[in-house]
Image 1 (cartoon, rainbow, N blue to C red):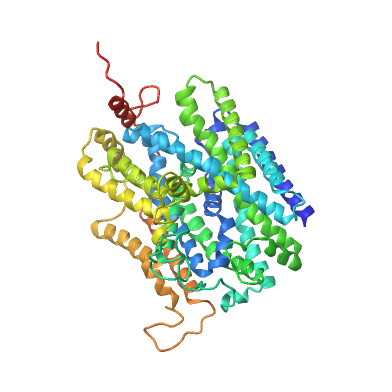
Image 2 (tube, rainbow, N blue to C red):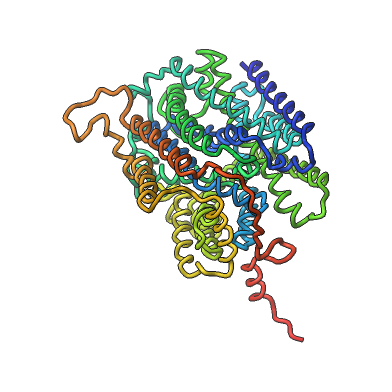
Length: 636
């Protein structure tokens, strides 16, 4: 198995370097290294974007959690539909705003629209979180799975440095376009392998146990039922939950975290650098909401069941790993075992390559090329991007090999903090009365709540001050849910008093262009109300408190005395039903309402005038006010 695995991994690395060399030779200008000339073919966003969403949810941990919690955790996959709906809501408008105003990145666009350098600083912090600890977390797991698959013939640290080198080599040669091309191809391989392993390994590992409810589960865990709407738990590390962690509030708040993938600065860069028409609708409806969610809902439970069945004795979170699975798969079929490892490796490599490459491009475009070294030539910018990429990969490899705990703590913040950009993006795309002050107030509260419901904030505060009465995710609510709830509340409250602030004119000009040139056909008031009401009803029953009805709705319905003879657990049928309804809602919004379809060319150019266009011309207002208050006054 070791020889076969090394051969297949080596083939992929050679392929990635070959594609990178071809794209480098076909580049027309050095600037294309950073963003592909903002003319990536639409299939890049379709296939690479889908692979990034699947890999970004943490596929390595996904199967382990399925083995521990069963179908109650499988409900989390419905969050991919929510991520697709978030993409329908903002991606087309972001592309329009970028092409209309001439800004190439999310940070520059938000800074220009709201007149705030602080927002650009925040996006750069998010870029750093995704590019280093989040990617380092995936690289650490990539090294662990290769070491486990080869029986430590290749040690974990050796695997980490080898993978980091080859991924860096492909990225430093091909740049943004070459990396996206390789990720697009690998995304197709990833989806194929999930189906192959789920179906092929099912028979060998006893997949009928999943259908008939014979998969072993830890004591006290309801593997085929959601354990409640909410549990009044102090959080992970403080108090154990009864029946399992994944209540409806945990599922819904985890789904909100998945939105952070499509709202991240890196993912929006992929959308903005794809040439119109970007085929957003096809990707969001059929590939993300349809294919990606369907694969996770239908095939992933079989793999999770196989992971559970491969472990002898009682299941415990501290003991579940992939070592027993690989041993069991080798006994069934060596090719199947290699496919299982390659499936996990493909997902992890997608995360590392995408966020490292996007981090280098965004730092050069938004910081080095704009503020620190604005006079660089195009060749100089390309060289700077390559050096930055090397520094990023070196940092990632060091974290993954020698400080994996730091990568876990830092990477755990990335998605929850990324989703805090949602009110700012809603304001830019749809709601002109959301002001800069409201967005900043919401972000402050949202970030604080995320930090104090994640290990980083808890460890720092409790080491310096006193122990907090809660742990991670209190009340079984994910940190993304805590942060976004306070973020939206503060944003709406502040908007009441600042809707007519000094920057309202800039916001009005962009929204006037949207209305005049790219108006959405949402119908009359009744039709608009029906669309948004349908989304809320779907979310209530698919992810919210109504999802608990799926525990017994089909196996023991209250409206009939008959007991249906189902081949699947009731909760699984509920998940499949609302997945199909979610695809329909995404199709209705994306195609019928035109929210993801570009119906006319983008010809209007609008100069957004930020209050502080660069760091050289002025610091953020909050920093200036702080300095004026604490600095001694000088008298003549």
